[in-house]
Image (cartoon, rainbow, N blue to C red; front, side):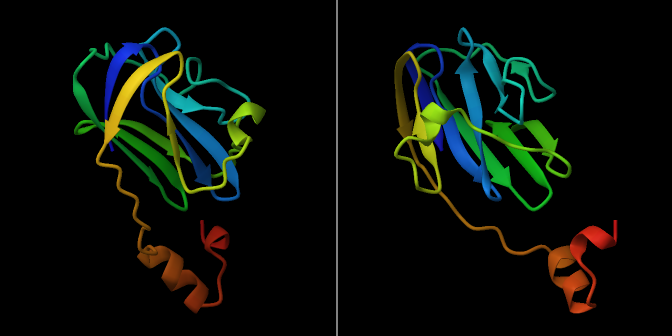
Length: 145
């Protein structure tokens, strides 16, 4: 998706599923200059291994891309990959206020400000060769690692 901060701080955050759990990608949060995953339990986006300070400009379009696969959560700002987070052995949680009334594949929101969002695209990833190969041999994907 593409997003622009009009004013305020958190301008293009996304609430998304990670398997059966949920997570948030915070864009421009915590005062306006933080990018990171919020709530790879128990940490917030401003204080975990996915935290990136970025000087987001107002009235500029940013391309924000998020990819959730079987083993990773990845995120890009424009063409720069900023987040590459391994899922294995991690728990994800979202704050209770984010779950209220949310039942779709994605929620985009601005927090304490105004934003513009356009060009939202969602697509399902094709199963990886690995996820098709091991079960065909009668081996669970987690057993071969």
